[in-house]
Image 1 (tube, protein in one colour):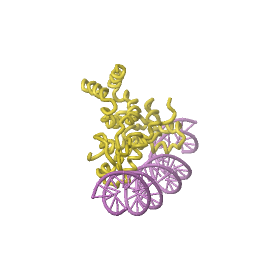
Image 2 (cartoon, chains in turn purple, orange, blue, green):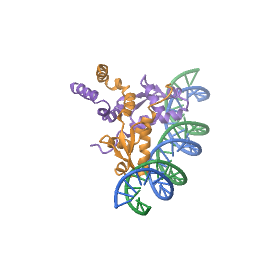
Image 3 (cartoon, rainbow over the protein chains, first blue to last red):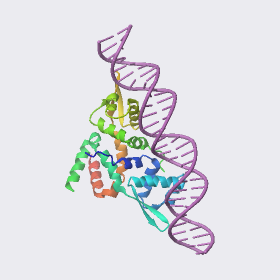
Image 4 (cartoon, rainbow over the protein chains, first blue to last red):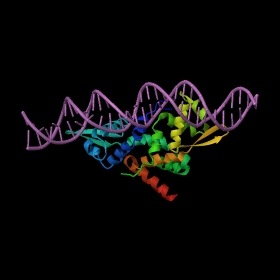
Length: 107
Length: 107
DNA sequence: TTGACATAGAACCAAAAGGTTTCATATAAA
DNA sequence: TTTATATGAAACCTTTTGGTTCTATGTCAA
């Protein structure tokens, strides 16, 4: 059993509605900070802080490009949270969970 | 922009490791507050606060039984978070997402 | 080189979160 | 009825969170 809680930074990142909105936004494609900040009614440094927390959760990766820093969604990190939640699949839809297992076994 | 964020109370509830541990614990069966609090190194009122937040997220239901209050997991509420996350399934495993869709359509 | 642009980062602040202790209340058991 | 138990709830405290403004730095463009 895993003693420590590696999913904490991910769940923490997902807890804020602004950060979830940023994830949605970045699912359409990578963007520099200023462009992201334009979509919200808060200052750029505030958005930058949210991006830092998303980065700590591994949810985004940053690549410098000239004087910009391009933020790209790393959806694989979402799987950490999905795995934890899906652990309880059986409780809300046992049949689907079993079929999904079959699908996974066949792959 | 989405008008309102109905998933916020769920994600908020999931953000704390103690609350996730409580969810795990209750997946084994309903328990009264004192029994839950025994498992953590914090006071009963602290645990009671966590239970209140889980209740706000719809993740647990409480039924009074004598002088006890039995906390029962309501895993259906987890689906709210799962749905949001699985919306990004395509990014980490497009094939599985499609098969899962087929399964859901057949039900 | 000079000026504009994109971002980093520090200092600061108010509110929320997560904990505590203390006290009140309802039910069960003696 | 009296006492013990299970919980609710208030008051309080400290740390974290989410925001701000101001300043510094590196890069592009004239």
